Length: 112
Length: 113
Image (cartoon, rainbow over all chains, first blue to last red; front, top):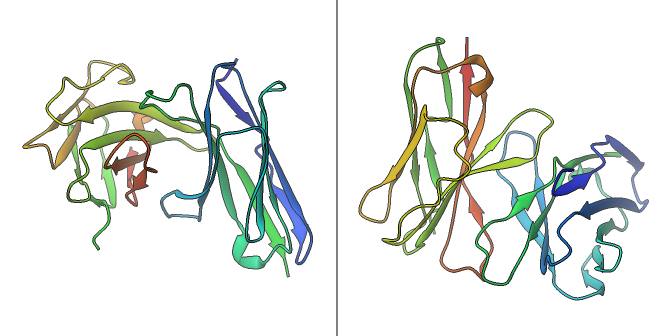
């Protein structure tokens, strides 16, 4: 079982719709969760971090964490063509752990 | 300010040759990571450097892979006797402490023919 799993996509959504991305992780003691966006040919950049159960909103992005279900998601509201990218879920097991485990990423395409 | 710089951006090499990939982290960032990203795969952890501590090499896939970090700054990832399965994007990242996000370079795309 992979440490972090994501649907690879591609996920195609029309402009203005909500894009919903899912991520599950295997290590029950994981504490920190991150979403990175990676444009084609570019490096990953951090867009959201979440540490507690529930929702965290930042602009058009909402991260949702459910530690009991070992599940973290990312919602992109009012999707724009500029949101077309691969979204990587990353998990850190413990507060003093320096390793981030990444999922394979979900490719999102927003249709104009 | 300047971000993480990697060179070369692209490298094509013949099977069996050695290659060196370079990473120049953000000034002041004591933690440096190398990851590998293959098509359709997540980022695979290779090696971690923290200050003057012994590096965590647990992610290096074989003894053909080695890395060093000189003076706590620039790092070089060396792959000896390259194989076709080594073809991937090699990403370097740095951060000032464990509570800060990773800052990635643009990567080196390695193609072994």
